[in-house]
Length: 453
Ligand code: IFM
Image (tube, rainbow, N blue to C red; front, side, top):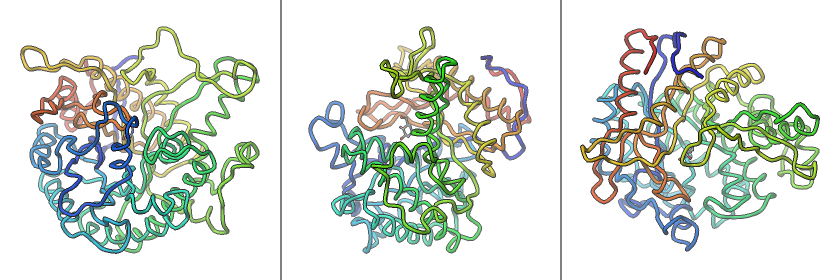
């Protein structure tokens, strides 16, 4: 796919960068913050590479001013950050921690002063441990705790924040956290995974209701991680394998949010492990939203399992991969956007994450020439432009991530930033991709389009 594009992004299109509380803030024991499931998971031997944790991360809690300056230099319109639930409600509900709120007050004010639109995320995976001790997301009570938390955050920041995202990647929360144990809290049960997914979706619906009451002008959405799954061949077996995996990754979440129902083919297969759906739940989940956030990294070809059952992703020889071993498929981004617009018709779509890990090094001149990342981003921006040309209501593109950061169970081994972090000194070094993105944003602000390389 060519990196050049000729489509015009619509006026007011937002160019931005994304982040998440536990991945960059650090300061886990400061100013009254409570324990999160990620603190506990990282402290459990064998869970995170090298026993690393987000205890210091990028020290954003103290250095956010410097990082806002970097964003100003980059010229972004928007910054997506998440609020750490245990920082503002240390026990998950009840007692407020004013010092925790103070950090987000200062951050939001700093962004607004810099002319950067804050996109506030309510949940990017750092559940208060106290709530996990009561059963976590598989428990219905967590939904009400989330609604309470949403209310206090909205009352506090709603006068200044207009873009709200309830959840990031519910598939990851439920399957990696509760189904397969790769993420906090490290539980391994398919029943729990589907119950968690249902309660995360339900809590999204409740949070939208609360936000509409407390912040009437709010633009509210949810972010899903979506991929495109092509059948590896035209056989019925491969087609149905791809459809099944699409049900697992994508339709299980898109269906309830936009059609008010879990996809019937998946319900038929999962009838023994179905979540406890109560009357009114599906209506609550399908409450109208202002935008859908799409996190996009990769796509794959899918074939039936070797015994003809199940599904397997088929690696494509010759397709370049990132350091996460994910295939680089910008064509999949265009497919995802066109398909979501066609089948689910969200009012607006933002790409709330797109980016790549590569093993960057600072060279002897102090530069980081991350040509692969620059090419990755250029190819995906071009794919996004094709989606715009195909009339997809795409209104923004946010790179993951501004800074290298704590990549969950991979620790610090995987670098996604367009700014390099030297963790021992916390020195920030903008990479070549930063300067490329800065030029792109400047050109787009001046009317684009151009070839970017
Ligand atoms: O780092 C994560 C982020 O927290 C959620 N989306 C995917 C990123 C890269 O794995």
